[in-house]
Amino acid sequence: MQWWERLTEWREAHHFPIDALGTAFLAIVVPPISRTMEGSSSGWITIWALAMVLPLAWRRTHPVASVVAVYTVGLLHVVCGFCR
Image (tube, rainbow, N blue to C red):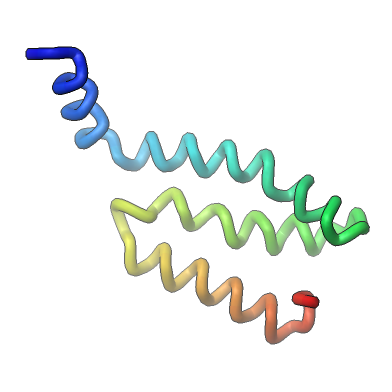
């Protein structure tokens, strides 16, 4: 068995940890970028950014729940008037 076959098998067996690691990276990077783009240090911007990013950890194990959560947060963000 070649190394890429072993890597593929490992990746297929560990969907959630891989997605959780990617989500953790985005949770570290996205809120500061959102605050910078908004030009304020409001805590609400961080909450909206994290609420949009965190459901991505479930994207392969619970895809429908992930999509519903992300779209719901996005819709609420627009309805609440925080989108310019």
